[in-house]
Length: 284
Ligand code: AMP
Image 1 (cartoon, protein in one colour):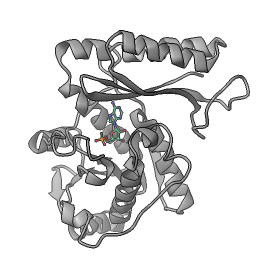
Image 2: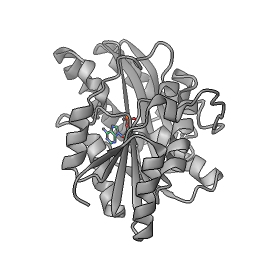
Image 3: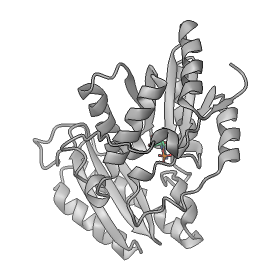
């Protein structure tokens, strides 16, 4: 389409979507909270392979942050984000304000039972309630054919797929592999909070994940491997391990022993210098 346009209202978004629909074009949505890095851009690149027009949304969603989390200091880098989406040949940037997303009196909840209370949900109560609420609204506002999410937030991906399936939303969710730096650290807007030493330690997280995955794939008991991985992380300087778990990739049930349904993945969230790092890795 050429130049990147920016809209802020639902009306302007829908007008553009209608025009594209009238031309028979397929539309993708890439929801983000901004502070874009190469991981986000890889979602836009994937979106372009599956659609003719790509909408990127930026909204730092307060309802998915806990009270003691970094909502107010979450990085906001609008001009830079605009440039990056433009270079990636995104077609539309949707940046609704808080009143558009949560008008006075907003009262609706979207809860996905079972999947939302474990791992991230246990460590961040209410987090997925905020995610499903905002993503459901974005889907209804943009009515895309496909929406793209990163495998970095694997549990989020599983939950959103369930929401689309359970609520008969007429669209598909596609996932993009985790974008990592040259040392294997999963890219995250929050990595910017780490000191130089912290960054070096953070880069060991994916090595421990990979070696743990290899041990489990060879037949070692997943519970023992996860416990020893937690010890290793604490030894190298992580302050707290929220979880380090081995689960079935699609059901997110705990994966114990040979009867576990493949594919299986390892999931970790750990804190370093007050920064919460999240990663996951395929076992088999
Ligand atoms: P966020 O802005 O952090 O909410 O992320 C927006 C989207 O980008 C989500 O679908 C994330 O899973 C995805 N994402 C964030 N970091 C990465 C990464 N390193 N690799 C792939 N996708 C990512």
